Structure formats: structure tokens, C-alpha cells
Length: 452
Figure 1 (cartoon, rainbow, N blue to C red):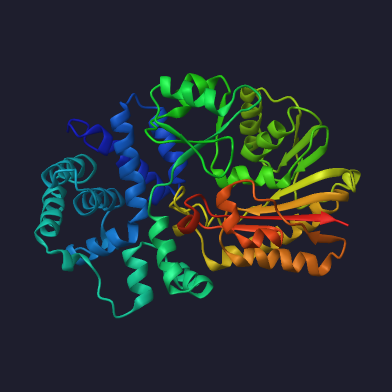
Figure 2 (cartoon, one colour):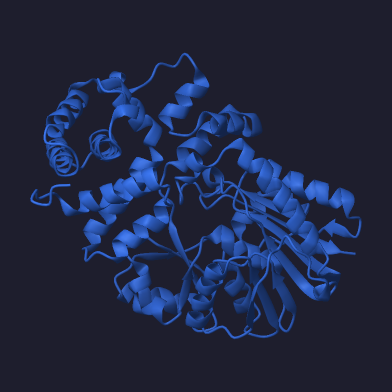
């Protein structure tokens, strides 16, 4: 790396994050957050960096296909730094109308000179200018293989495209692929222990945020012109928690009552746990467990910031059984580890980091955790199983198998707590499947059962 070359700082930060993600297998959301938190940046620069990082990750296979077509050097022989510089440049040229193409090329060349050898600038310049001169048809693959075509155009692995088509049909599959590449809303949950939604919306407006009410949950606020909302005074005072509306629905469907005992078997990072405690108005007890101590530390920070006093944090592996809690809990939540296929909009690298074998191993874990947790539910108590995936194998299939082997549990109909839920007829059966392309919130599965 040559330190004497001046480059555009936001693009350089985006490049470093992409290198971390694509070379070191870092999570894009975590690497990006770390980069933004350690840099003194304007709101505009933060937004641009975020757009660049997520844009490249979301459209990676389409961008790499373009590189392969316009570069004489095979992509596998291009150094990782230069690969990611080309990805950044192509994303700006092909996907961003507001960025001047000349700026995209010139800044990419500068980055190449800083992070590559002295002749690499000419190579980058040639590839990018060749792409600019190409007509739109040259930037699209042929449609002689539908799975391959959709995989490239929507930048999803072929196995996942095929699975979506098999599970949901070709029309819905295409809608899911399109939706997965769009940015999701940022939603926050009002901490009603401290403030009402209306009061919080007024405060956030005064802090400069553009806000509107969420449709699915009475505590939900959608924030549009977000930069780093965790730096806001309202966040630091514990007036809200960042949480999608799908995730908020879990606690409402669990329906904990004041003074009850609730067990959250897989609690980190704590959004649902603290929501449960909030609904219980700081009464009773919520036993919040997770296998990872560092994740419990994150939960603890949120608990303290939100002013919650009825949560008991415990380091415990949900794959193990705790006999002392048999038949003790009024409510048990299994927010199971899953493939995350419902939150690809929020974590786009998930689609590149999963494979069919992962789903098979995750299913085994889900079955075991649900079976263990069912022992803790007292008679007439509720057991809720939730995931952030749209994959039937991890959702409906898990529940059907559980009920077939556990006659002491039955599905319990779910009340519609908001108008959008009324269109989901499956709530009468006791479960709710949310799809991003239909409901415009994260893809979630939530099922409620009762011990009889």
C-alpha cells in the first residue's frame, strides 16, 4: 500500500470493509458498523459508505459476471484488493445514477494505485471505461438457463434460486429475489416503560429524524433519514430499542402476563427478551439464556440502558436440559438459530455464507432445542417457536414433526393485533409466516402452542 496517494475517504473505507467481508469472511453489518464507529464522518459520507458496501454485497454475482466479461484477466487471478476496487467501481457505474461515471473511474484508479502495483491503474481504467462504453444488453447474461440467469441478475446462489422456485413457485420466487436486494426500513421499538410512542416520535423529530408509525405493532416507529441513531440522546436514555416489526410480533404472540415466569432459551441479542420484560411492566421474571457469554454481555447492556429489572441472564446451552425448570414456566420462547433467509435484505452476505448442508444441520439443532424447551412449560402455558427465515423446512416442518411426537401440545390460534395480520389466515391455525415481498417487513415464522 502506498500512503502518499490521496484517495476519496468514503470509498476507501467502503473498500476496506468489502475486503474484510470478501477475504476475511467478516459479517458485513458488523464490519461496516465498526468502520463507521471508528471514523469521524458526516451523515452524507456514512450514508454513501453504507450504500456502497451493501450495494456491492447485494449485487456481487452480477458485478463479478460483468468483471469476467470485460476483464482479460480471469477474476480468480485478480488480487483481492483489485477485485474489490473493480466491484466498487462497477457498482457505481451500473447501479448508481447520481454518481458521475468519471468520478467512479478516477477514484477507482486512485485506489488501485494505492492498494495495487504501479501499473494496475491502467488496467482498472481500461476495464471500467470499456463497461461505460458498452450498451445495456452487454451488461446482461443470456437467458438460455433460467436458474443461472436469475442467479446472476439477482445475485443469489443457484441453489437458493432453485429452492425459492420449488418452495414458492416462479412468480413469488422472483419477487423474493427482487425484494432481497432492496434496503429495509429501520424500525425502533418504543420503550413504553419510559415514554409513549407519540412522545418519542416528537422527541426524535426534534432531534432531526424523519419518523412515522409502524403498521404492525403499537410500539413501532419507522425512521427514514437515519445516520447513526445509536448516538441520539433518546437512544442513550433508553427510550427505544432498534428492532424490526416482525421481531416485535414475537413477544406479542407469546403474550406474557404480569408476574409470570418466562424463559427465553436463545435470548441474544436481547430485542425480544427486553420486549417481553417491557410487556410484563418489569414484573415477574424473565430467565434469558444464551450459550455465548459475549452475547449475554450485549443483552446486559441493553437491559441496563432500557431500565429493565425483571430479567435474569444465564449462560446456558439450549441443546442441554435443565430439569429444575421442568413444568415451571408460564411462557417459553424458542427463538431458534436458523438460516436467516428472511433477513437477507438486512444481512446480504447471508446468501453467500449458507448452503443446503447448513440447513440440514440447523434443523437438527432446532428440533433438539424445541423439544428441550417444551419440558419447561407448565400445564396451560404457552410455547412459542420463532425464526427469521422463510424456509418451510425450518418452520412448518419443524412444528408438524414436534406435534406428531408431543401429544401434550396443541396449536393455539393467534389474535390479530394489527390490520396487516388479518390478511394472514394461517393465524387461526396458530402460526404466522411473514414474507418481505408481501408484508414489507423481515421474513419471520412465529408459531404458538399450548400445553394441554
